[in-house]
Image: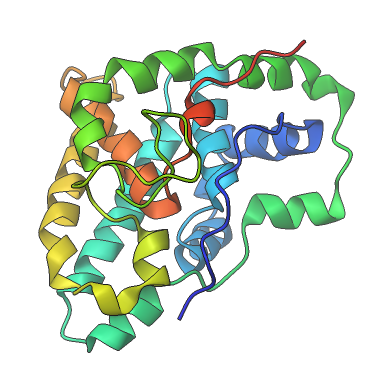
Amino acid sequence: MSPAPAPNDLITPITLAETAQLWWFCDGAIMDVGTRDHLHRSWGLCPRHSWLYFRAENELKYQPLGNAVLTEDLTRRAADLLDSHHRPHTKWQRLATADGCLTCDYLSTSPDGRDRFTKDMLAIQAGNRTRSWLTGYVDVWRHRRCPQCPNTATGDRSAPASDGGITCRVHLLAEPDAHHPGELSGYLHDLTERLVACVKSMTADGPDRTMDSDAALVEALGWLASWPPAEGWTAPRPR
């Protein structure tokens, strides 16, 4: 059905080439029709670049609006798919990644990056605003974290988290026979509505941000791309 989950690597420092490509996403390229179609097929970016895009937008822009819009779109599509009349096998097939990560594809052709992105690269690597967003809403999202992803509480990258939580898409597809599509649809519909509130809170005339709406973005990234291990939450500072 799906290959074994790839490591969610946020430990390796971000490169200039990654910074350049993610900067273009932050500048609006991710809204391009062709790009969005690709992201529908791939269910977003790979685990590493999903979280790095979140970090890049937090550090380089005022707020991660692009992330919120993208994850709301993908989460809604997943909820509607799991609610559809297709057979479970078909639902799992359509929930699987069907195209490559756009950032990984870019790196395969432009691996070197440009020096003009050095300042942005260092800001993303420091991750100060990202750390604040993640830790500020931990009491909301910690209970919904995938129980099969590496434990963020102990720092043990081989141990699963405590019982409970919501199995992420990556681990769901690794063991599809252990789950039923109906188990998730209610959660994903609720998560979608919380993401709508998250998107609106970042607009000029929208409602105030809340812990629940901001935490929804973290949950959506975790569900779509898997949750990073403990080290991923504290972006290492450049030496």
